[in-house]
Length: 138
Image (spheres, rainbow, N blue to C red):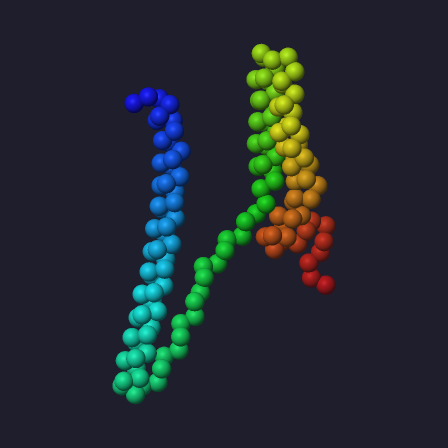
């Protein structure tokens, strides 16, 4: 096969596989909910036939969502060092193209500034800790 043809098939196969996985997950989730509803229905019918009190409907409990801490420090460092590396790499061969590397570096620097100014207080609030400099109690 030609390399160009393989290059065209790779994204097509990736998209098709992604859609197939999504549809399979939706189908399995729906089937599981329907099986639970069918089981609950049969249980209630059996209780009615025997003259017993109907069992209460189960409470649908969704799993708790994990607390996501802000990741401004990580984003800032990745963008800053990536921008610096891009600037150095483009500065080797091109005359003014190295300036494009300053854009992600500036965004990374902005993330780092935000982290050091406001992000620490935000992450402490997300974790439930009192901010530094405040007293807990009265």
